[in-house]
Image 1: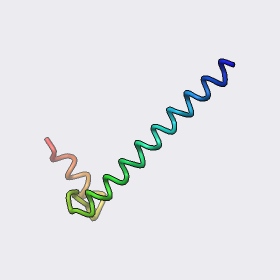
Image 2: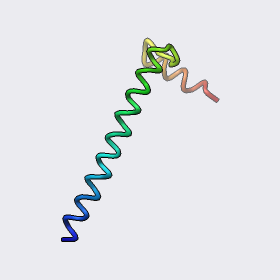
Image 3: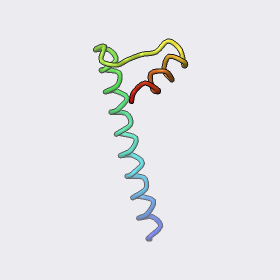
Image 4: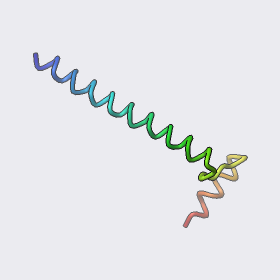
Length: 54
C-alpha cells in the first residue's frame, strides 16, 4: 500500500503546482491588462534590457 500513498502524495503535489501555475498566469494577465508589465518588440530589445539591469 505504500506505493498508492506515494502516488497520492505525488498527485497532490502535482495538483498544487498546477494550481499555483494557473494562478500565476491569471495574475500575469491581470498585470498585463493593467499596463504593469514591460513588453519588448524583438528578442534583441529584451536581451539588451536584461544586460542593462545591473
